[in-house]
Length: 256
Image (cartoon, rainbow, N blue to C red):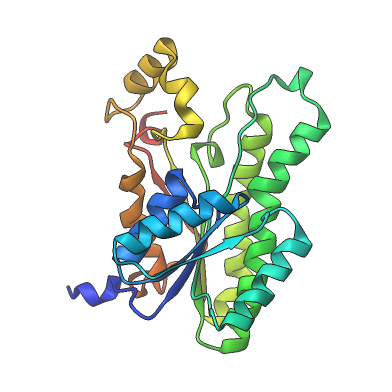
């Protein structure tokens, strides 16, 4: 099979929340496959540093500082892309936050903050990207980052679980409306991945042991192990794949 199916040369990818962690790894992977990438985050210094590191790798990279949960900021960012001639062919909705607290103690403001950042933001950014994909008439790719909690709940992370379950269904809703325009919208559901967000869990001996014992792979995943799936969903190889979620979890859900 020709590797040109996975070639992203000539495409531009916006990856939200990509100044570090999984987002940066995905931006780097898409760039290595040939895409120009737009790094997003809320801190200008972090975005600039990520752009510089990508450029050092020979990747065409741009930076865009905006809050993905702010509707006006998202609209302004896309207007800026329009002025710069940056036409986004691939959107990866990766930005997300976590808040661990039992529901009986959970304030609505913390609930809303997680829902806004992890779910509503994917709608806001996805809508702006899709409007332009439709207008250009050549389709596009949307990759929404879900989670194991898109499928299975865990105690103390209710808003995250609800948001990531929503990501699975948002991808299907996008597919239902936008497939006619040759836009494919799918999700990736990472398992337990070694990231900054999970540092406290990795350093908890009991939780670390549970992850390794409950996963057939008997280990945590690495951010770079998500890249192949992201490139697949961003490329021509997945042109007839729509509204799906692919779990990259070492087999965790298979034995749940």
